[in-house]
Amino acid sequence: MGERTKATDTKHIRQEILERDNYNCVGCGTSQALTIAHVFVNRSHGGLAVKENLCVLCMDCHHQMDNGKKHEQDLMRLKVQSYMMELYGIINIKKLKYYKWE
Image 1 (cartoon, helix red, strand yellow):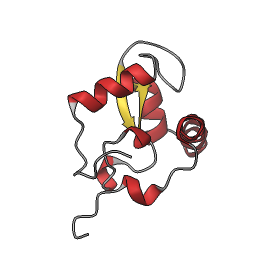
Image 2 (spheres, rainbow, N blue to C red):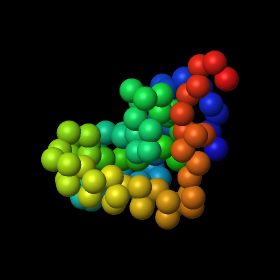
Image 3 (cartoon, rainbow, N blue to C red):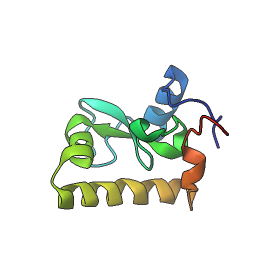
């Protein structure tokens, strides 16, 4: 698992995620308007920028996962989390979060 540091993306990690996901959106497969998304623990909730918590999404899929209708969010999150679990197996969510006082 990656280093436990504050929730900040680094260029190195971003490049590793882009290469791992073949420069394609995990949600729909496009190679246009790509972003790096936090999957299990959002950055706003202390999500770490580690490969087990990040994937490539296009702007549309990222928006759908974060701000879509409830059923759209659930479907996109399920698709992305299933992909991540195929890569890494069972993921310990507690290890994906920054705890300031621990």
